[in-house]
Image 1: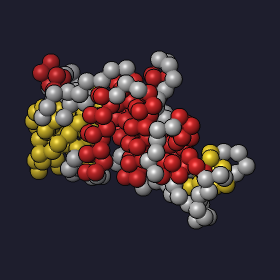
Image 2: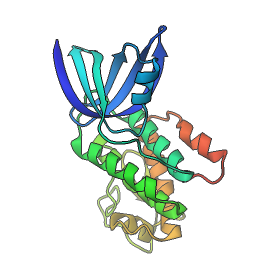
Image 3: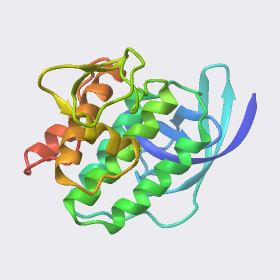
Image 4: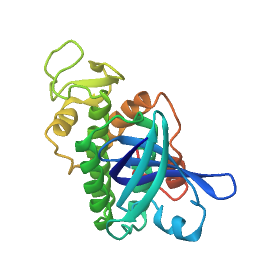
Length: 233
């Protein structure tokens, strides 16, 4: 049996038996890790195993089985309000569905932490949307699903005045009516301060994300949709 010390965030948990919990962590060193936590339903453990709380965990592992031996809080839980909370729940759900167990990506882990920190500070809907689109792009890249934002599926340069559709898993293709090339190029240049650009990028990323998740439903979209216009994809 091997014991590993890991930096981690809680993505998901469910109760098992009378006192235990099965917790899905996003770790810096090992990516997604599902652990059995004995006593996870006790008030003390529940207070520790909260989403949006940076943790240090000690995990005993043997093959595909992991047991949470120790957990400590690195710093206080992040606090969100309104759209920021729904957006944070959304990116947690994306990670839970998109990443394979033990697939390490330290860059994605660091971007995730910075994105959460940013969402605690934002109240403007457009700024939140831009933050989500940037995170989605990093996630797609980490999962190998990114597409070219400068060339179409025929390796021809994207033309600002032309219109395109996205072929999920392949890239952009010319159409008579679709997304303006100028909006795709703005995304490539990380110029997400225009409402029309954000609308186009949201359309692009929804299709790309749905393809990467193989159509799995995102509950956070539904939850936020009931509150008003969604910032989620």
